[in-house]
Image 1 (cartoon, helix red, strand yellow):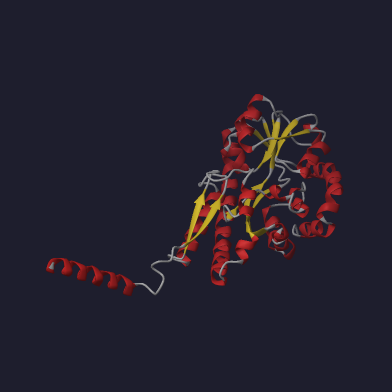
Image 2: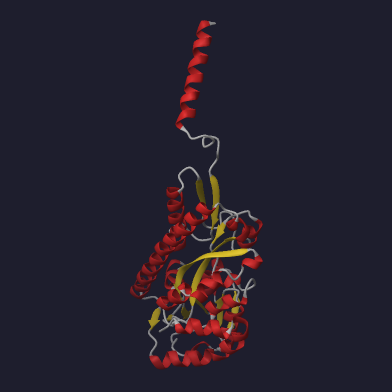
Length: 335
């Protein structure tokens, strides 16, 4: 009996010591969990930016906030992730910009061909008041944009020996993302756009289901498209970027200090991921050239002028939906 009382006394003393070591209520409070779902591998710039965000948030809020990152469609694929964030099943996603045209037609500005001269111009536009306003343009539909993450500028490839002028792609089949602007872009060239999932593109190129595609240098290299294409034109004709979005109601309901900390971490993670994207595209372009399997065609000034002329009908068609002021603001970023 005496031994039992001694053990019980020691247990109470230990419990009291633990209680004294923690502020009132903290020991029992579980951390706030934030789920970040995306569809690419961790080693990609998007994957690395998501991990950097996790690292920064958990360093800022030790024990208070935990970020769980789910790469490679572990939770939701392309077709389901927007629905998942609207339902609150996940808190952060980073889809391609082309995925948002059903929520706001203004986002189609990023799909207009030959709008931006380079990624520096894209950066300037996205940082401008017009670009920042686009992040807020879908709050009425339940989505709040937090940041733009880069993939890179698009290049054009096909299975022919020559790829310099618009007439070189007439009659060919090109894989596109689901986008009205991209579909119109290829129809204006006399080519046939085919909507295919990203995972299906290599086999479609290899078997001739499609003749060509448009993508960033990093995607062309990592997916080995250059192995099954004869020509790559260095057109820089468009941009493939992502928008990190969250559920607007959930974001607005966060405590002010946590919301501010998440925003700061997102800004730093964005700079980190965008720097990696630039470095990767430069390195992968060189790797493709050195592989010697697909010829990289450098376009001259007259070539680019011909492509721009061919794309004028696309601009006219979508100017009403996008807004002339928004297009003008994007053009201004080139200077």
